[in-house]
Image 1 (tube, rainbow, N blue to C red):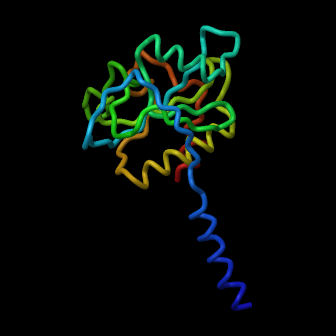
Image 2: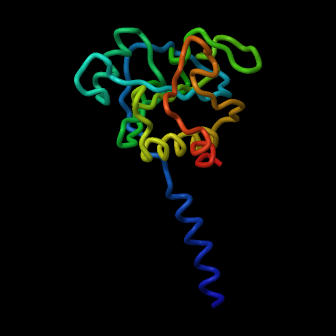
Image 3: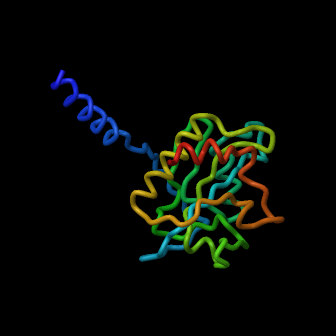
Amino acid sequence: MGLILLVIPMFLAYQSVQQKVNIVDKKISWGYKKASNRSVDAIIIHSTYNASGTDSFSVAGVLDQFKSYGVASHYLIDRDGKIYRLVDEKNIAFHAGNSSLPDGRVNVNTTSIGIEIITTLYTSPTEKQYNSAAALVKDIKKRRVIKYIKGHNEIAPGRKSDPWNFDWTKFNALIE
């Protein structure tokens, strides 16, 4: 009995260590500015989709749109929950636009990390996307002190409506 009580906590500790976030590097050459020693204390959650093709959920289509607008996020999560790193966190990605944080700070791009979730106005994020987004946020929070986790609509009210169909109660429970 004593051995079992000793082994179970060791197994659980091993499992939590092994839950590494799998990120695929898919670095882009637009939509960001190189930076060093920037202070990040916000994560902004976005929604996006491929509006110019037949497959709304196409990663390539989304990236083509980003390129045409000269924008980017740090991360993009596809429908299967695969996380793509588009821009290194040390750099300033152009994802927030004209916006402000609850404390009144503007230039949100300079102090935030942007996460785009591929979905549409009429679909919700998948379970895999929620799980991946939560794992990514938890990973970021291990490395940085995060004051705000906000939707794009919260920092640019009236201008932006995303993340669409996003269940904040579910998401907040996952990042606890």
